[in-house]
Amino acid sequence: MPDWSARLNELAVAAEVPGAVLGIWHDGATTITPYGVLNAATGVETTADSLFQIGSVSKSWTAAMIVQLAAEDRLRLPDPVVKLLPEAPIDSRVTVRHLLTHTGGIDGDLFTDTGRGDDCLQRYVALLADVEQLFEPGTAYSYCNAGFVVLGRLIEVLDGRTWDESLRARLIEPLGLTHTVTLPEEAILHRAARGHTAEDSSPVRTWQLPRSIGPAGLIAASAGDVLEFARMHLTDNAYAAMQEPQVPFAGGIGGFVDLGLTWRIYDWDGRRIFGHDGSTISQTAFLRIDPEARLIMCLLTNSGNGTRLFEPLATEVFRELVGVAHPDSPQPVDAPIDAPIDDRNVGRYERAGVRLDVGRRGDRLLLTEQATGDRLAFAEEPVHEYEMLPTKPLDGDHFVIRYSPDHPWVPLTFTPTHLFTSGRVTPRR
Image (cartoon, rainbow, N blue to C red):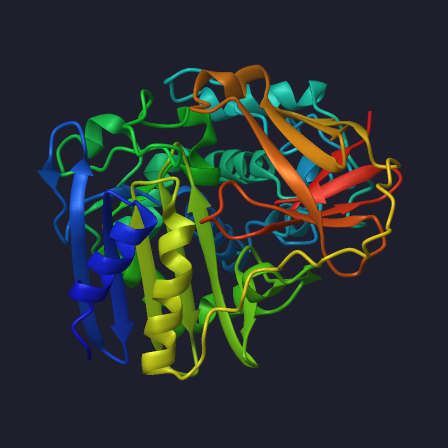
């Protein structure tokens, strides 16, 4: 296997990522390559066993525990959630499968801190009585953190212990993982990364999301432990259903074409790959698994610029080992010179935690993103403005935006009733 140290160093410098660890497992051989510093304020060096927050990659760990409970005949995926968890104040038609596939319709970005106590998930779930139902269950896809907190609470009730304790008993200890934690008092016993903003790489003020978000994104782990968890999905057929397509994903950003039971399924040059990404407070993580080549790649970073590093690095790793590349991001398309600016999508779009305002400034359309509510407690950049550029099809409803000239483009799709971006349905107000 090639020595990836030099390329990781070069690409991380170019992407302005202070610290990262690249993990590769290929047909039995493991390589872990660290880079940079864990904290720019202290200069602590990144090591192979350093802990990074893996964000929403945690959802695949929660999903694996749900699959275990199904195998134990303690639940069925078609079961209505309220049948198993009567305390959940959600639509009675929402099933376990809906939550695993982000199709339950619950407004999903509720980041309320319900305390550090063992009852934090129970208290969070009670808050969903006041959360909007965005669409009928099973009729659309919209990324839903709240749904995974509900799944975590379901695990707690069925197991009779906290989600953190079930995680240890069901996955961490059986897999022999020694560098996987959920709580800050556990992380401090290891070398743990601190997030750095995309804007200027300054260290963040808040280290971790609230404990109530645990099942959706609170795991911190080393690259070696992430690889070991991923390897379980290549060697244990008990989890094979997680890789089977359940819901198509429109747009195909990054090659993402279908959703399995939480795993995202990608098409890279006709090759089927699965995995997940994660983002917390300026820490980003990426996991890709090629079952045919028996190849796993993870990249853990302590920066909001992680995607700028991941895309070229993943292309080099997969091109070298498999012969495929990370798909190109969507690109803006020059509109006809005489095309008028269409104002039909100008207005306000809002869901839990974020307000999106589309406005016009001269001959440009702009999107202003504003963090709201509980999200303000850890938003390092609560307001950001993006220029909207048209992309295919040139119908006035499809655009792309990007954080800065060095970042990948992100698509926006408008309908008369909502805006779809970053995998989320945001209603027009």
